[in-house]
Image (cartoon, rainbow, N blue to C red; front, side):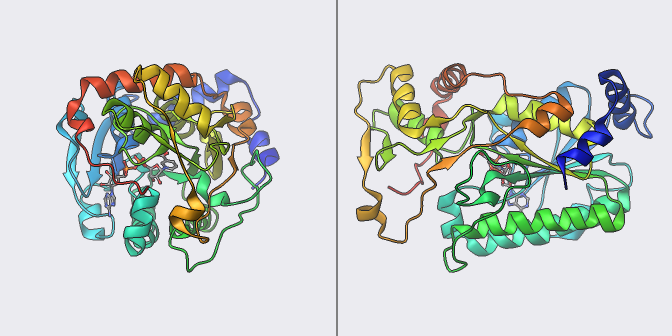
Length: 358
Ligand SMILES: NC(=O)c1ccc[n+]([C@@H]2O[C@H](COP(=O)([O-])OP(=O)(O)OC[C@H]3O[C@@H](n4cnc5c(N)ncnc54)[C@H](O)[C@@H]3O)[C@@H](O)[C@H]2O)c1
């Protein structure tokens, strides 16, 4: 779907859009507050999102296969344990009174794609299908969190929303996540076009922040540095990413969910600054104040010829900026400092196992 058409639909003043937003949120309620469900709301993004939704007055139910860590429980949020693959369980929370479903439940992290490839695919496909069926029945809007991984190895960065996808072999479990997220996106576009479901797709780019499992570049490097274990970078560390602080991801998610103009659309959400992995890890070591040398990992020797890294993963965020006025605001230095401060104050997190390979 083209940005042009989206821009046409968004034409009008900011005031018009704001009025539309308020009307949208208040649909059928009269109070301005929405009744929402967050699947996967015990996870990293879900905990931050559920708290932000509750703080602005929405009535929030989290539906997750696991309860959150006690430090992640937000005031006023209802927590229900269940599996999105179980439609009967899911139907107990997505009922006729729900306005918006934020569908985050997924298996996330390369270590888990390799360990649980069947769950990765089933949860993205079956779980998303269940969410869409129930949301349609409830006349609720769906906000689906997808990923920059759908673009795979496309070398043509920065990627616009309509960029091509270039993925590796289906025999490589690493691609089960990107492929099943992309198919879930197809399901959503199909429900939107064929059945009139109101839905938006958000593709996050390399999120980081307090509470993330220590299996990702930033979280793992902080986790290692604060425990006195040297962080690692793969090969020369020259691969680049766009590191996006969790507060920015949450503000984008709310902006997209609140805008009628965002319905039927996908959005890249990320910081536009391109940063090398080597530089980011060096900055983490400096900010922790730990005197540690970063250790390079020779991926060819460690993982063999089948290992695939992406040299650049950068979003073109023109669409979300022009349509909704959103852009990231938290510089990497500040986001890292806040994450490190949180990690120091939460020793339970430092005791979590480092499950990433290498
Ligand atoms: N963190 C990132 O950098 C990033 C980047 C791109 C996209 N995303 C997407 O954002 C969403 C949230 O990611 P996250 O980083 O919070 O991951 P996370 O692993 O911290 O959270 C995912 C949550 O989903 C739950 N879950 C898994 N299977 C479930 C099931 N069958 N039924 C119900 N709940 C289930 C887990 O228990 C967990 O709490 C995911 O959809 C992910 O694909 C995240």
